[in-house]
Length: 283
Image: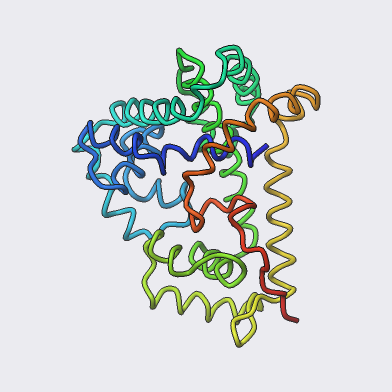
């Protein structure tokens, strides 16, 4: 299900209409819109809260955007802008689908989103508390976002149990199937911080001396991924297998079109974006 609601949420990061909507309220530049839009449900927070909740960003990068973005747009303005941009993006991808299709998808997706467990899940909780959208596309996007952030909160909790810090997680993953060139810049870590993280990964037996992923690290990370999936199961158990299958069917054409605008190197990690031949873990 994640592979079906994640692309729907992701239009807020990659569709030009989303960026235009942020710029219309004074949030010029990609990262101002990103941090303001994603953090807005938390209120006018500063960098420390976002560093903790978003997990993978260098604190210095977050501090360049927060709290200064709130002088450009209030959280309420940022929330309106992100929903406006997302709905306009989805409208481009769904204009051929009948209204009944969108309404049914919105009903089922909202029902799933209403069943998220919010305890210990900060971003999931604050998104779940937002008002429902008035129209099907707004309802679809907000419900997908609640489910996405709920799953992400569970993923962060699972990553914490690995004993790795954020830059170590990124550095290890980039030795498996992701791009350092993209992820280091996108998350704001310096060359020195990245190199030090790789040294620590060798010391922790996650990487070999020649920087190949080990069986030890691979097994722990696989367990974290499985824990992430288990922690996200609640809404789908509540919805039931038959209606979950129906929702997947309804989301398929929407998600397929949304996927088309996600850059291949984007840090979302959807299966189709992963390298076909990831390195074999070394002993």
